[in-house]
Length: 232
Image (tube, rainbow, N blue to C red; front, side):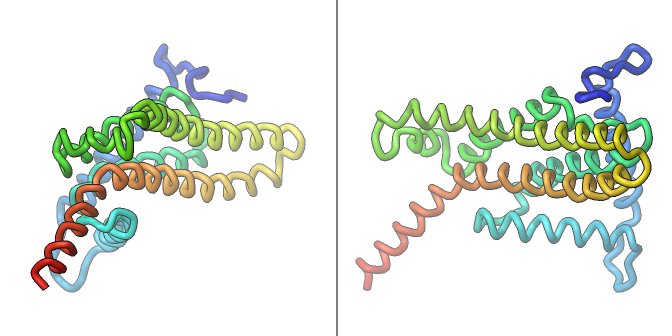
């Protein structure tokens, strides 16, 4: 039983890299096939229907969490969700090992979120406005804010890795005890767990981004309210 895809070598290539490239190729080709014949007519293909349901669902989730226009954040958050979900769900394919079962993959995804938070925060508030949040309500909070940024990045990486690794270990143990029935049940539960983990990772990423972008929006709302009071 391999706990991590880092322990797997195929054709001299690290298993994590190989399976990650395979998923990237699958998603790239799948995206091209689904979007090459998009239609605005009443009758849509089943793939376009599925795509629109997925995109609309992601947009609604982003809008509910951030209270902002989801168009800006959809490419990043949506890519995180789809990549993790597909990586986990393909675990039912014989010989395949999800790259999300490797700490290097989950750490890379968490680092992407780590850099996305200041990127969107600065884009929304400006450099000075974003950096000002690190010394609110007092400059003494600066080291605590920095520790918080680092700890939640570590938490994202370890949470996804731990859940996927534990699922693989449980399946391996059940295979040795009852190789006929329990693995089938665990594979079904593994699909559900994989989708849930993808959802949680994407939602947490959006929560962190929203926390960095909503401050300016709240300041603007408070300013508008004060102006209404003064003008009223």
